[in-house]
Length: 319
Image (tube, rainbow, N blue to C red; front, side):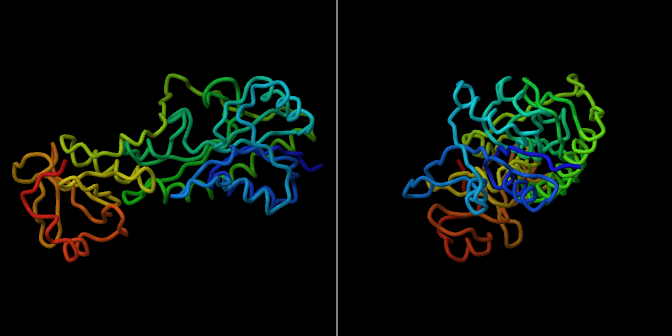
């Protein structure tokens, strides 16, 4: 079977892991890489290349960074590669019909959920936030809809009670690489044999949507149940990071856990739990495990109490 000629489109580290795997494979040739334009980052707001661009630069690949794929010149440029398949992983740009139809065998996407659950931009965040016990990776054939294409392959992954978006992202990257390579092998075999790839149509009635994360969601609302807030702390680690405020000072909450029934206290009230601190919620309480003051390093509650005893005290109310 001849190697498949691929265009790769992706932007963050999750996508870069897949590009590295394709470059390590002898079964495929990456002829071009598409990624988001360089963005300002850090305190100096200097332009920074995406993780996918860094991998492409290190490998000497042709790199394209259009702001849109809707203009005719960009589409002609992409079509000129005469690729067999376009592999899309967390790219961040919509693919119009002309691009979807450009590769000979179409476009496939690696999506970090068990479709049709959690279509959209933030499937990992939303799965943890919702308290799901499992998620996974889906390889799908792309169509004009938002993650509505037919499923080529999928694989499950348990969401452990201690998983954050960061830890689950790492697990799903490994799973996604495995499933992507297997899917491409299927396309390669079917192409050689002249038979269609077997796919599964999604059940739209079961679809849920993973809306893009807004930074404003990270502010903890102490009127909510502790179990909901504990899930949000995990979901928003490492971005955008859940937070509250103490006397006008922002306190980021990196790790926390839910406690059951507690004495009736106004939501947002700090109280001592042995040598730790908890915050009363609408139901139960949130036990603070790891936090970060503005301009400081992440620290345990014990470290915070030793170094900033005057800032926190039982009975205070968080904003």
